[in-house]
Length: 154
Image (cartoon, rainbow, N blue to C red; front, side, top):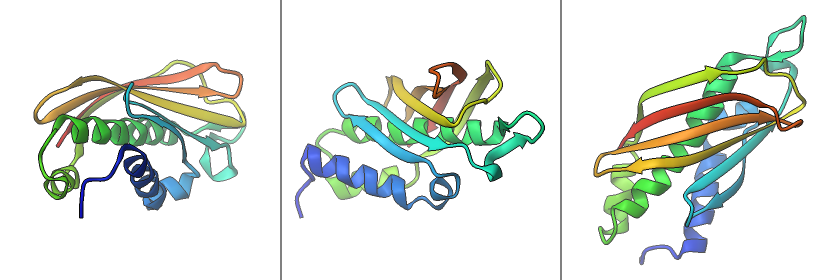
C-alpha cells in the first residue's frame, strides 16, 4: 500500500476524528482542514448535557478545554505527519498513535454563552518530537470565549 494522497489523507484525518468516542459524546464535528496552512476547525452545538452553569445556560469549562485539546491534538498530528517527511507511512502512523498532550494552558476569556461553538487550531512550531499548537474557541456571535496553547509529544 502506498502513502495516501493529500485528499486521501484529509479523509483519513476526518474519519479518525469522527471515530473518537468523546468527540461523538460532545457532538464535536470537524469542519475544515487546511494541510498547507496547518489549520483545523471543528464545531459543536450547545446541548443540555454540556452546560456547566444551569442558571445562566453557560458551557462547562471542561467541554471548552476538551474541544481545545482535541482540535490542537489533531492539528499537531497532521503537522507531525508532515514533519516526518519520507518516513514510511506505516512507521508514521505508529509514531502518531502515541501522540499525547504534554502540557496545555487554557485562558477562559468570557462565559461560554451561545448556541453554536467553533474551535480552531493552528501550529506554532513543529519539532522532531514536540508540536506546539494554538487554539481558539468562539461562539456563534464570533465572540472569543477561550484560547489555549498546548504541547504534544509524538
